[in-house]
Image 1: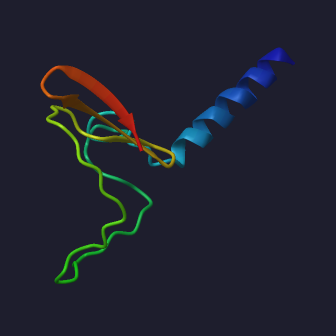
Image 2: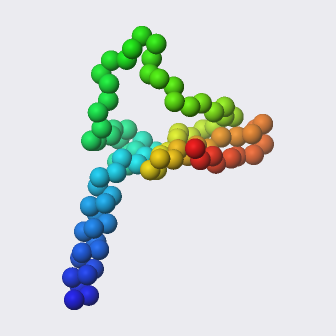
Image 3: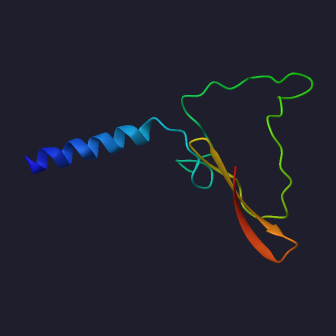
Length: 87
């Protein structure tokens, strides 16, 4: 019975992870800079895509990561302190 419960939990976790498109590491979940299961525009309007929000950041050397509805980015304040920000 414990073995069946273990298998059920294992397959449940695998299934849950397979349907998300979180970019929680460099270049995305498979580190190949591609996303699956999402429709993207093939051409943009002349004025570009709509800007949903904006935030000024300091210098940084990493890319943004996403998880669920949050964006994580690492930047630097005045070349002195690194800051991990979550939007």
